[in-house]
Image 1 (tube, rainbow over the protein chains, first blue to last red):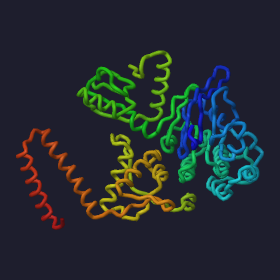
Image 2 (image 1 turned 45 degrees about the vertical axis):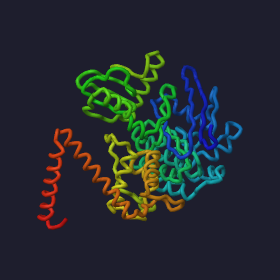
Image 3 (image 1 turned 60 degrees about the vertical axis):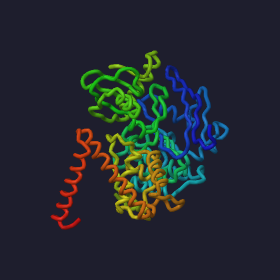
Image 4 (image 1 turned 120 degrees about the horizontal axis):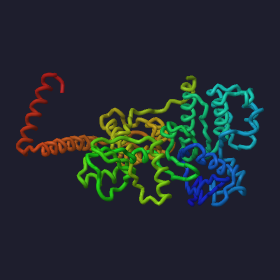
Length: 302
Length: 146
């Protein structure tokens, strides 16, 4: 673990009945927006819950800002703004009473920012939380998290139920929060468009399995669909999938290496296309399953 | 939207990323910014967006914009000062000329390679260059302005 890490997870596991999450290994420096993505029930909320000590891992080591739960809980939480998927205990409270409550706990509470965020979201500060629309509830919860002056924002489906313009504003707010370069955002979402637009890294979780943390731009740059004039032979690096035919269709996860190998075999790339993040995720899931069932390598044939 | 009014003005630059481009995104940013600076469209002292703001505008990651800014800074095109942000650097006339020359060298090299692929001889290439020069000079004369 490095001294500066915001989050460090070592071999973290959690199981309930048949569901098992992990092992998750992660070492995250400040300054980045990390999107946690994967199918529903994949473990996103469990991971977020563990980062907030609402759920305790069965094993492994979990550190935030170098501290651990429960010893450093208060110190950690003063630096974390959290938007839970379903906040508990907010129902009877208004934006005004919630801010009173929050400002007492967070020394860096920024009331001006809070009021600005609520105003932009058009939220009546005297209205009970449970009388607000789902979208307004999310934005109120987001405003509370941002205004608490955190170093780390943990957002669990922050935009669900928020209209497209509102989502856009929230992504802008996140970008502004990140401006100084020393803050961190971890957000769970199933909206890939948000991931594409705002994440620096993508953490894939599926069926409780941690499929890795990837630089988003690198994923988009290196994963390609290549149509080639004939099928490559032998060991070509980066091949994920080959569909024979003329032209043959290849999916690769490292364009540079694969391209060089194809060039060496005098294979011409007829056309190349990009993959979206959903496609990358489904390939990663298949690779993982393939490895588990003892299928050799990461190359699968269709 | 009322929110537009509340936000402080921040610099924007007309960089565009193309996903299908085989060039990595940081290189696309670098070459477009370099072109704007060399052509004088971005003058010395012009404030550039922060790495995070540019990443937001381009929907790319801050890893990409940082790499582009670091490369441009080491090449002397931009400079970053604590508290001020990133601005276009003053570039000497010789350096400007050298970069412009480099672009022409590149284009010439590309043309020669295209000629070789087409099976042309050195003689043919010289003829083509001569003809092209004459044609271009003539068309400049016709338009009246260089």
